[in-house]
Structure formats: C-alpha cells, structure tokens
Length: 145
Image (cartoon, rainbow, N blue to C red; front, top):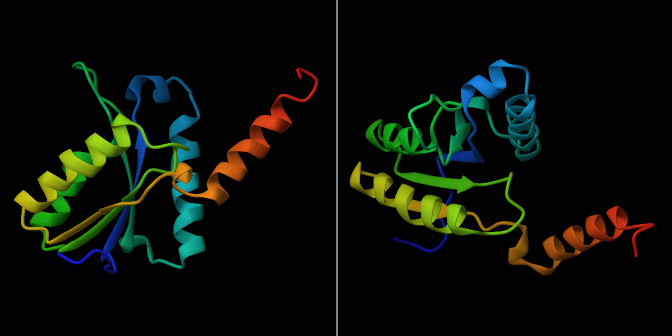
C-alpha cells in the first residue's frame, strides 16, 4: 500500500443524527449535503466520484442515510480499490475521525476487497487550519474579552 494515491471516490462523512429530527425540520442534513456539494464542485469532481454519508449512529432509531460504514463496504464490494474519507463537519480530529473512520471503516474497506484507504486529517492538522479556528474564536469572543 502506498502512502499517496489518487482515490477513485471521496466520501464526505458527517456526524449522523436521528432521521426523525431531520423529518421534523432540523436543517442539519440539508446543510451537510450542501457543504458536500460545494466541496465536490470546488474539487471539480463528477457526482459519482464524491459521496456524502453519515456516521456515528446508535440505538434502534433510523439515522440519516446513507450510513458511512455501509457505503464503504458497498463501494469496496462494487470494485472500488482506492477510497479517501474526509470529515468536513469536524474541525479537529477526535475518536470519531481517528477510530471510526481511520480504523473501523478502513478495516471494512480492506475486508471487502479495497486496496488503498485514506482518512483525510481535519483542520487541526496544520497551521493554516489552526489560524482559521483562531480567527473564528477571536471574532466570536469580541465583546467578551
């Protein structure tokens, strides 16, 4: 497995929420899908090369779909060999981005025949991302400090 590769498909995985919450009018799902669409367009990718999914469901309720883990398994089973996952809803890496995406979903991908998998690091991975977070925090704290 090489450390650098061009993915056949990129998944943008957002944190999930119960589908019933979205059905009652919460705009979160719409915002996630729009964010994914804007990223796809900025990258210049066709719709079939960029997929929005949702992770971190629990309990028996139906959550927003498609589920990340099921999409990863389905893509590998369909013959996709190189897959990258980005988590644009997370500004910093945490257990969900490192463990759930980077380990669990990578394992599903390899077990289903995938060959190269990448978890794209969150914004805290570099100075530029930290400067963005700092600017937002300082802006939002104006009048408080």
